[in-house]
Amino acid sequence: MAEIQLNNYATSSRARVKAKKDATPEEFRPLLDKALGALGAGSSTSLRANLTGITVELVTNSGHQADFWRKNWWPAKDSAAVDARIYSISGVAGLEPAAYYCPAMHTALFVNTEYYGQCKSWALGIAAAILEQKHNTLSIHGATALYKGKGVVIIAPTGTGKTTHAFRIFQSEAGKICGDDWAYVTFPDPIPKNPGSPLVARQPEKALYMRSESEKEQGWLRSVFDRSMSENVTVRKEDCEYPLGEELCSATNRKCVFNDGRHWCYYAFGNSRVLVDREGILGPGKVVDEVPINLVVLLRRDDHSPAEVRLDPDRAIEVLEKGEYMILPGAGPKEKWGTISNEPWYNPYLLELDNRVQARFFKAMFENWKVPCVILNTGVEGIDASQRRIVAAIEAS
Image (cartoon, rainbow, N blue to C red; front, side):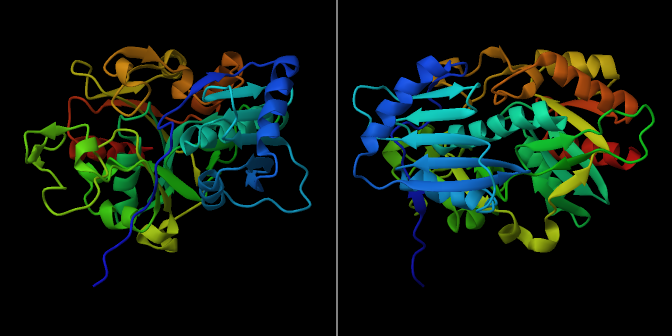
């Protein structure tokens, strides 16, 4: 039997680069001109994606960025007008790896970085700004799934388990996956006092950009990841971040996979990712592109909060707007791991954040549509116990 070849790409910047999200056109245009000059006679690719009706164009000289972009999004029609652009250009002399966004132009520029995660997030964020301003749409950084015909949105900071719990629902006989990272929710305009139909969360991505360390807790994912495109997966034991002596892994307290004859490890580096075809995991019958919003679940991870708390609308909005969380390995710079930070609305990818608009949308969701909201602490219970709480809350919604 032929050995599987890992489709893995190592980016020079293996995490998010420094960013300026409020560049003026006067600041932005010279940077863009300099970056475009680096394209010269070299090859570049232009690709248009349809993000829930918003056309975002990527212009890049990175084959890696282009490959992931094609796999990640539904293509836009050739006749569609471009609403926003992202330029991702490597080989720009004299500039450090960085990302810039000009709100007035709905245009982003990535310089000397091929890390796809930040590019993907900013594509979602640019579309979010346009959808919010023109189409009464809320953007949620969260996983979405369907269970017995009811939809759940799991909102949480990176690393607290939203993908894990969405996948547990996905694996159940009565469950289906929608997305693991983002959802757009369009509200009627004006918002009715007594809505006659549920809100709907729509998935803008056709693939799942997953933390590869998910394989640590769900070993069955290894075969799925092996046949997917990956980014920054560790292929040498000496590059592992979690050695324990010569034979063991401190992340699992088990034998190191390299010592077990494997040629790569999906959890040896906290910021490696895999781009997974949703329909290729358990088949197209287990996938949906939208779900009704019957329940919102918030996740936190600490050693002292209750396992479960039902939140009234005001408290739910307070928790969401504050967005307090602990930075876990693989989320943000390594020197900040273990410290407390804040992500308003648990969404660091809103490039044009308006707290008043976010609060208005969530208030309508919880009060007008009467969507229940619970917060679970994944730091005091295991995955199985937290999953039982989620299923019980869905069934009771």
